[in-house]
Image 1 (tube, rainbow, N blue to C red):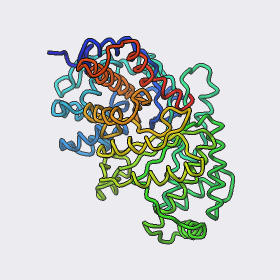
Image 2: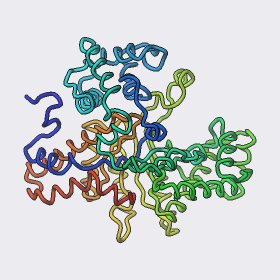
Image 3: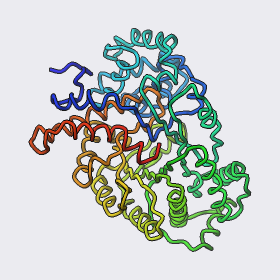
Image 4: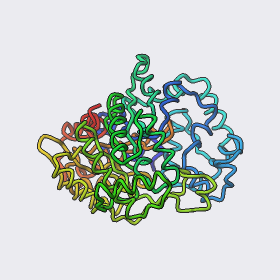
Length: 467
């Protein structure tokens, strides 16, 4: 029987262990999509306790706590850090097999040298041990965590209206070697059917120093902000969208829809879909011109519980997987961009794992000479970054595409302690590859396999994004 989170955690054979230890473990982390705060990096923030570091903003954990009947006061409410931590520790024995259970213990072991199993009985000892280290250990400030995790590149998620102040300051700080790049997330500019759109456009106009009263003004303001992001080291966009649906609107219709939204008028679902599709096409061309990567995350059913959304707002753990039909719209978008010689490098993520094969076969239709994997599927995302979800995604990718092109893992996280998810993925990936050899389905060429592991764990992302 294996030890819990032992040296051979998730490594199923001697070859898997060799590949991990010799080729994966030491590779720097290129975290090309996350939601951490660049201000906390610049200021080298130090968390006051493990509850703040672990439970603040982590809706993976919040969902588990709610499913166990924990009162909301102990999750996002005004309970003390200790009360929240104890509530989380108490439910852990009921979460065996859940990736959060494994991640939590991996983080305890890697950052706090703690081998205790989290439960109500061990909570106090773990609380005191972690808090002592958070306050005293220089490797457990935000910058210390990043250095300790061997992170070479961090790509945050940023709105076009953001001034990128903290990115600029970090770029000037020679004492910090990790590169921190912004990524362009223009969802608020595209969602003209959402409340507060006029206020957002006013903010965007101020940031671009350009008045926005008409649709063409919006495009100009976005171009100005694209230039500012590009000058600040941005090399990637990210679109979080329910689905991509082609609805064709004329320039006059786009102007009408946009000005009506600014005036607080009603915009139909068809009009909103057409507006988003037009902006995606415009922005895709801008990304291609700048050499950026276009990332599309789709398939999330947002804020399914109206009661809880009204209480707590978005991004608090009330999203789920949507039954998607977005792949056909993405195919039309990519085709139009290719026809205009403006197809950027593209990464496609669906929250619905049923789309794995569809994405990979679609990607195979949009490749280009001299580019490895111009269009490809991104890593198993969100509800799918479990052991089974990662292996299912890798299998679909491997069945349809050269696995040597894959860009590897990302955290997609708001937590600075989540870099162990790269270790989690790397261990699984080494076992995944080694299994082909063990079954006699691939040659035992350790040098070739090692090179493949290093590329997927690090170098492919460096090359694809140009970091």
